[in-house]
Length: 97
Image (tube, rainbow, N blue to C red; front, side):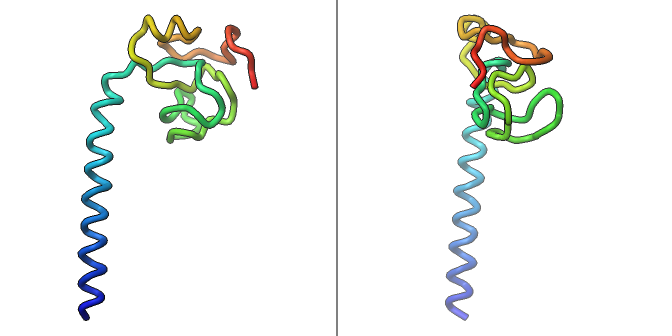
């Protein structure tokens, strides 16, 4: 019985730590500007504009106009060759890889 209680407590602590990590990461992403067309395959920050996937790291194509990465500002996005709104196709300013 004691081992079950220890497992329950360990699971509760792990869950609380996970929730704290997610909660603290969310405001940081909220301060970022979505920059489309700069993410390499598997390096996008969240779901894409087309709705074909809903999580970070799931992009299959580099520099897609549907996938984004968070950057500091719209100016930083432009400097990186990206756009602040989704677009069709691949980013012509980036080499595909």
